Image (cartoon, rainbow, N blue to C red):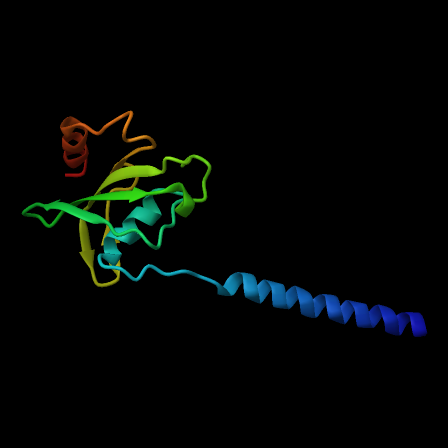
Length: 135
């Protein structure tokens, strides 16, 4: 009987600790609070493994249809995927439309990305092809 009470105590303690750890792990979330939340949303949903809260997208141009070309640079300390090494990444994105809480873009063709922009620079042609593919 005494052994059963001891096991029950350990079981209760383990369950309480399990719930505490689960709630602490699920409750922490950093949120982006800068300008252009729509552009940040597209960037984080397009590049898997990327979640940068301290980086602001830089607007490059907007066409007559409202499509926005923008630039985004992230260091590796903000990206958790090993694909983005110590040099970080630099990317151009095209967003089709943004309205209230919604963002429209063509997934998988809406960006170009470089791991080492110094060694493999973007060309004007790269950006022109990106814009053409997102029309």
